[in-house]
Length: 51
Image 1: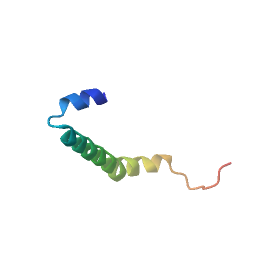
Image 2 (image 1 turned 135 degrees about the vertical axis):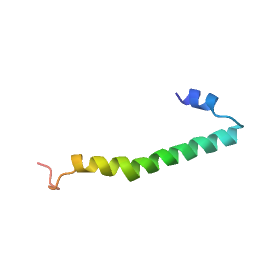
Image 3 (image 1 turned 180 degrees about the vertical axis):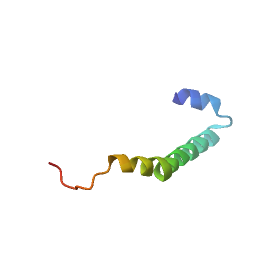
Image 4 (image 1 turned 90 degrees about the vertical axis):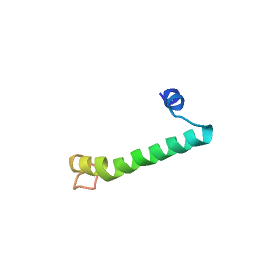
């Protein structure tokens, strides 16, 4: 999969690395802003102690 991404992206090596890093930052940001808060309601418990 990573090799396919590397082949698809245009430009020299530094541009490809920059695009991949920017894409990773965008994905992590979207996960932190939308996905994780949405699933937190389903997985969080009010009891902090583990039985």
